[in-house]
Each structure stands twice: as C-alpha cells, then as structure tokens.
Length: 434
Image (cartoon, rainbow, N blue to C red; front, side):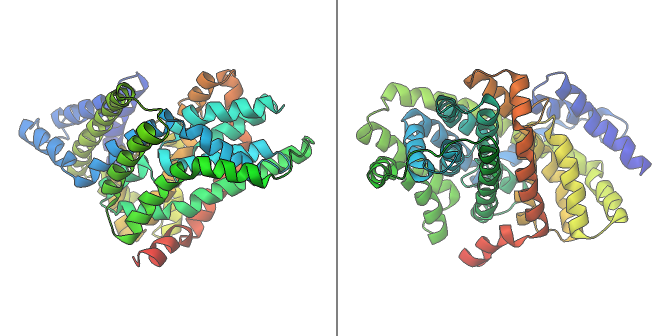
C-alpha cells in the first residue's frame, strides 16, 4: 500500500497540481510522463518510445469517428435543427401540467441523438429552452435546473463523443456502447420528468394548452429530416450497413445537403467556418488521446494499474463492490476534471482492475460516462454551469444552486445501472447478439 501511495502521489499528484494551475490537460499529462521518466522510479527519457507511443495512440480507424460527430453537432446547430426539435417536443408534451419543462427534457433527449456532447446541448438548445420556460412564467431556479440537468443526456444517448473515446481506449465496440447507452439515457429523461412533475404540482403551475393534432403534424413535418439523422446512424450500425465511423461521415454529408438544399440555412462560408471550428476541436481531442496513450504506458511501467488492482482486490473481489469503489472515485474526479480528460487518464489504469474482477467493460463504460456527467453539473469545474451563466441571465451561483435537486434522479439512474447490468447489456445482446 505504501508503494502505491508513493507512486500514485508522484504520478497523479504532479498531474493534478499542473491541472489545478491551469495547464491544459494534454500538456500536463505529457509533462508528467517526462518528469516521471526522469525520476528514480522511471526508466530514463526515451525519445523514440515517446514518439512511437504518441503515433500508436492515434493509429486507430475508430478515432476517425470523432471529427465527424463533432462536425455533425456543430452543423445541426447551424442549420436550425434546434428550434425544429424544440417545436416538435412542445407539440408532443407541451399540454401536460408544467408542459414547457417537460418539453425541455424531451427536446434534449431528441437532440442528444444528434449532438453527442452535453456542452453542445446546453449551449445550443439550452438557450432556447431557458428562454421558453421564462416566457411561460417559470421561476429562474427550475428553468436553470431543468435546462442544465437535461443537457447531460447528450453524451449517453448515441451518438456520443465520450463513448467513442472510451471505446478506443478500452478497445470495445462503439456500436455496442452506443446501444448500451440508450436505456440509461431514456431513464434519466423519465426520472427528470417525474421530478419536474412533483415540482410543478407543489408550485401549482397551471396546465398548458390542450393537445393540437394539427400543430403536432406540422411540427413533425418540420422535424422529419432532423429526426432521420439519428435513425440513419443507429439503423445503419444495427443493420451492418456501415460502422459507427462511416455512419458519422454519412450523417455529416446528409446534414450538409439538408442545410444547403432543403433549409438553405448553410452557405459555403458557414460550412467553412464550422469546418475550421471542428478541426480545432478535433486536434485538441486527438492530442489529448495521443498523450493519454503515453500516460497509460508510463503508468504500466510504474506498475500503477497492477498496484491499484491489488489494493482494490485485497479489499474485495466482488464486481459490484469494486464498481461502487470506482464510481466513488469517479464522482470525486468529476468535480475537478473535464469528462474527456478523466476518461483518457483513468481508462488505461482501470482496465486491469476490470479484467481481474470480471467486470464487463461494456457495462462499466456506460456507468463511467454516466458518473462523469454529474461532474459537468458540479462545482468548481462544472462546464455546464459556466455555459448556463453565458447563455442565460443567471449568475454562476444561481446556476449551482438550481441544479442541486436534479442530482437525485441522476444518482438513482446511476445506482439502477450499477445493480442491474441488463439496463446496459440487454439492447446489445438482443439487437447485436453480443
């Protein structure tokens, strides 16, 4: 245990200190690797090993999915799919008591099948959702809470950028992980709606307008092309027509054609602008992944995963207990570390533990991402909190207080997912026979 403490402090401590000082996570991981190699515990600075591992970490066909899904989310925001999705959700559930709050959640569930990022949901759809709730007379706290908490559904219901990165690092199937996230994502939406129903009942909000079939059909016609995008992705993967990476590329082409020739909201200048932003985001993520592969190799040289696995298995070898311990660690990590950074750093360290204890990497992947989503709503580094501050009239403190009650339904879904693995595995075994 003492050896693990010394090596862990050296390896993780330096990284966390640099991260706390504001050093970008990719640079912090790379600097930690170099310092550890030069330390008495390291094997000396090996430039050939560093360059080889950086190249090896990016030598993956699966990683091609990242630029496609990042660009897809940006393009969908650009061509006005956000408002069309919101209008459809409003026509579906707007007539219920507290209808516009339910619309907020349903719209996020639909949009999550396109964006793949919680920040994209909060920044794009969140602005529309918050304004609509405030216009309907909802207090600021419930408007902020529903808007922020529903945004975390984005990386759980496919497609999902965090799932793609986990799949690459854990060497798991993107398609299977995409399917595994569907039921947990839907459950979060349902549980959030249940909490909203309780709030609107206690605050005595009035029922909205009655259901209008003509309005529903009109909204559905407007949204039919956007809705085809997630069907194209998931349907193509399930049918075996194309891989998750190819599905992303086809969805991007589909969205470009839709924006240019159907909605006419996308110009060549606008497309070029989104390509530029998409390339910058892709470079940032792939740089982190490349350095993370080196970080994982140095951790292996220090025997950190083996030492951690021994410490945990000495405490318990029960898969559920071990998963609860790892989830507890992730809840802490998620409060001060961004989701992508946490995945790239921890997955290489966790994989030996999963192998020894017999935890299904597919099941754990969804649990890990679901756990880290709470970090997006948690101070001091909750990214969604900062986005809410930007796109609404609320202060950061108001956003922090507003999302607190919504931890409860998310934690309930997390516990259900841990104790009932079939929530993740059933769609995979049923639809893909895995």
